[in-house]
Each structure stands twice: as structure tokens, then as C-alpha cells.
Amino acid sequence: MGEIETSVIIPIPKIAGIDLSITNDVVLVWMAGLLTLLVLLPVCRRQSPIARGFYQNLMEGLIEFVEREVVAEGLGSAGRIWAPFLLTMFFFILCANLLGLVPVPSVFHAVTANINVTAALALIVFILTVSLKIRRQGVLGLLRGFMPQGVPWWMAFLVVPIEVLSWLARPLSLAVRLFANMMAGHALIFVFIGMAMGSAWLLKALPLVGAIVMDVFELFVAFVQAFIFTMLAGIYIKDAIEEEAH
Image 1 (cartoon, one colour):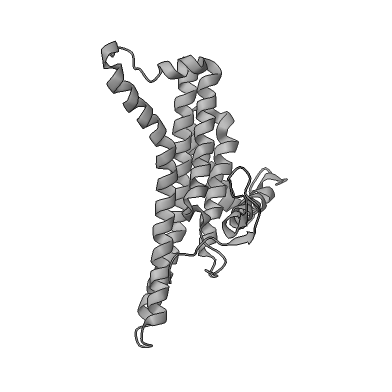
Image 2 (cartoon, rainbow, N blue to C red):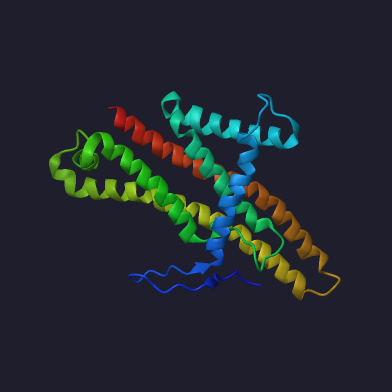
């Protein structure tokens, strides 16, 4: 059993060479967004100042963890305004990752195993950080940042391309890291299931146990990858805020 291919559900004619057809991955992105809303809405509408019940305490713990580790520790008090954005990013990626654990592989898979999805998320963070820098420094100020202070002018031909490449590597690393980790776990589960289907009945239990273990591990990976993506997004926002304040 191999990787699930993206299939077109509602074909739409190309516009300016861009295919806007509705695919199964597009539907899964919508489902992840809807699931994020359904997950967070009960917590946001809570009447009591004290969390009650397992679900509210679990969500409260996750929110406090992200706020403490990413917002408070990473961005500081000046970056607290970005807590709603980072929390939404975290829970959306987490929900998108968890869709891959639904035991209907012909329908559900981790949509973050699609590089187009992770690239879009990384592009959002990239555009946001660039906008923060341009708002205060201007375009010329942004461009001057590619030439560090104290570097001789005759080194510009070497330093500037390196600075530009390292800057552009940020969204690339965000997209590829999330995509590669989710794709690898998803593929391993398929391998174990395929081995179970092709094995003799005496040996079917071994790959099935492997698939179950991988499912449990993927639950952990889904959380870790959502947190890492959010933490890196917070670091990039912090850099933009600090440069903006200078």
C-alpha cells in the first residue's frame, strides 16, 4: 500500500494557468479548519473562570503550555499580541496532523504531509514577518539588513547573497520540516499495514502491532511538530519585532 494520491473532487477550469480544482486535500484543510473551530469554541465560550471537566482542563493546559513556552518565554510581553495568531496556528496544525490517525486511509490522511499545505503555512509566517519589518524600517531598511554592520563594502558580493539565502531558507525549512516528518510517519504506517495484508496469518500480528505502535507514536509526533512549527514562527516574529523596535 503506497501513499494516498491527491484526487480531484470538483474539477474547475484553470485560471491564468492555476488549477483551482477542489481536491481531497483541499477538503481535508477545510475539515482541519472546522475541527479547530469546534475544538476551541467551547473553551472560548466558557462561562466559569475555572476550567471544569477533563476536556476544558486539557485544552486549558495546552493553551497555557503554548502561551508560556512560545509567547511568554519566546516573544516576551511585547509579543503577547501575537498569542491568538500563534495559538490558532498551533491548533490548526495539530488538528490537520491528527486527521491522519482516523482509521479510514482511503479518505483521511495527515494533510500536512502535502508540501503545498505546509508551504502555504510557512508563506503566511514569512509574509507576516516581512510586513512587520517593512512597516517600521521601510523597503530600503529591509534591504540594508542584508549587509551587516562592520562588514567591508567590498565583501558585499559575498555576504549579501548568503544573507538573502539564509533569510529565504526560513520558510523553506518550516515547510519541509513539517512535511517530511508527517510524510515519514504516514508512510511507515502504510508499510506496516501492507505487510499485515501480505503476510501469512501466523505473522499478521507482528506488522499490525507495529502499525498500532506507530499510530501511538504519530499522536506524539502530531503534537511535537505542531509545537515546533509554532515555536519557530514565534522566533521569526520575535526577530521582526526586535528589529522593528530599533
